Length: 104
Image (cartoon, rainbow, N blue to C red):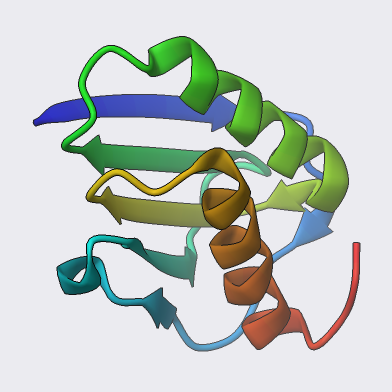
């Protein structure tokens, strides 16, 4: 297992609401927990993954996600069992949409 940490400082969309969990890690996929947090406008993402050595890929997917949503005061936890980048992006979008009801 590998744990990766990402922090984005420049969010413009503060997150509010009840924490949401989407996906199922037991299916060989991944789960995403998203929750509001007092982070001074930042968005923090922690990834726990069984696919060791893909840090650069995760960084690119997280940067794309942040550019799309611009979340602020958000904490995201991802438990991954080898999902593809497309599935990761889909689950992240699903998590945000469950809280905001909107689109990027």
